[in-house]
Length: 279
Ligand code: NAD
Image (cartoon, rainbow, N blue to C red; front, side, top):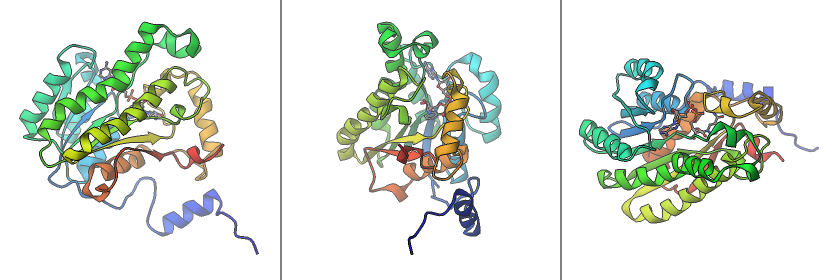
């Protein structure tokens, strides 16, 4: 007799019978930990999902949004969580330094930092990668990749007990995903940066991770052409037969920020219902 993999619905009901669902979770304690989370835009933002879960696990937080204009949508969320929200456009000279200074003034020190920001000019993003402008490519790299290194340099001196840095990447770093365009090479650079940062920061007890979620509908994602088709394809091919939830992404992030993941650094970790495993 040959063993067969459980069907998606059987897998889902098995998980439910164990008390595990996309919305509920076993806990990793972040009690007493202090974290800075960049990237609040609205209630769909991965940064918001990470903040909600980190707070649920006991963390004290400071969050950021891109600028004053973004406060209109982001501030109700930070108010709901009862945490400070600081505008920070990483392209502006001195903005990251000011953010870190204010976060440290509020929290005293940092134990984890979540970089959940990305941007590319739409004209460049929607065209062929070979047609992208050098200036557009450079801006996408600065905002979506190099800012993670800058952030780590500024935060590391305020992490005396060690801790974690987490950034968000996507499968389009590993394979050419239709319409992901120029963000593919940018995310590939980000994943490589994670490995170099892990080597450089490991001796200081600082761990570095890239989380690679499957597609979920957010404002950044809506900038990618045919994103609905990408989600539909993920839903169809995912071994778990569904998309991932914001809660599941937040939970992986919380695990990586907690002492429960103390032996891990330098990796890209998927939370994509298994999409990365399917050709
Ligand atoms: P989002 O639009 O909610 O978040 C993106 C954030 O980046 C926004 O808050 C935006 O203001 C911020 N940002 C853009 N330019 C900035 C700048 N110059 N300075 C500071 N902040 C800036 O979308 P999201 O999907 O939550 O994106 C968060 C991260 O997750 C991104 O790195 C994205 O590539 C990654 N990701 C998203 C998906 C998905 O399907 N949504 C999948 C994999 C990875």
